[in-house]
Amino acid sequence: MRPLIHPSIEDITVEGILHALSDPVRAAIYAGLAGRNGAICSNFLTISDRSVPKSTLSQHFRALREAGLVRSERRGVEMHNTTRCTEIEQRFPGLIPGILNAHKVQATGQPRMAKRKQTRSKAA
Amino acid sequence: MRPLIHPSIEDITVEGILHALSDPVRAAIYAGLAGRNGAICSNFLTISDRSVPKSTLSQHFRALREAGLVRSERRGVEMHNTTRCTEIEQRFPGLIPGILNAHKVQATGQPRMAKRKQTRSKAA
DNA sequence: TCCCGTAGTTCGTAACTTACGAACTATAGA
DNA sequence: TCTATAGTTCGTAAGTTACGAACTACGGGA
Image (tube, rainbow over all chains, first blue to last red; front, top):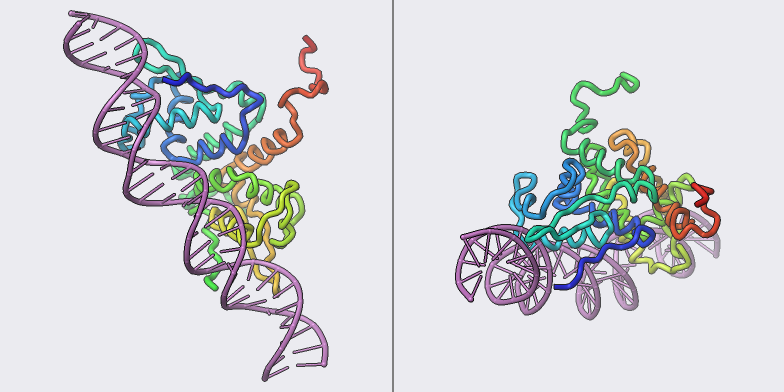
């Protein structure tokens, strides 16, 4: 089994991060990891009411890891994953919060359709 | 020639935005558009010291447009393109600035490698 | 009105990427 | 050692992307 690849902070690219998080499953996994403080892969076999095959899940974790978003560590038979958001925040301030917030807005449908609440922007 | 497709603001997705901007050429085009206030496609036939074929460029503009990032308008024989960042900022606050800033950080190699300039953060 | 030049689009195809099942490796515990 | 659990890798089918060639759209003469 080939060793886990974790890019050093200065090798992390914006393109890599955006690409990794442009997939809805990976974005959900990442948001899930950021919510708790770490989790094992199999916690995400079901995510957003959708079941994800084990092999696909493994590839998604690899993508997140190699983009530098996640740190994975073997603990016995399990793989423990945590986000690297503190590091990334230092290198690219505002990037991850902006993305996570946008995903949240989209999921909860906030500005979406402006449910008769509409921050009273020029009531025209 | 099929008509230009501009998604309405509530149909714009985070995944779409991230995917569109995860391509270095598209990210550069978008940053270029955000810098000036609008430009025509052929302004980007050369970008980041790299020449981009016309057909590829056209596809990139289509991708940006259909992700909701750019508005294109025919003006005579040219296509005038502007970013939709004000709209997007309302729906996904902080997303676009975070991404643009991250690209800038990466391009100017700020935290990256800390070229002996290093904003004198704890001189250790 | 016709013709030409410029700006951008579409089509076809070759190259690349992704998803997932089957078969595998790694570890813990009995 | 045997078994169960957790995750990885491989092969392949399906999807996506890049780019040249051929096209459409528009403006400006003559």
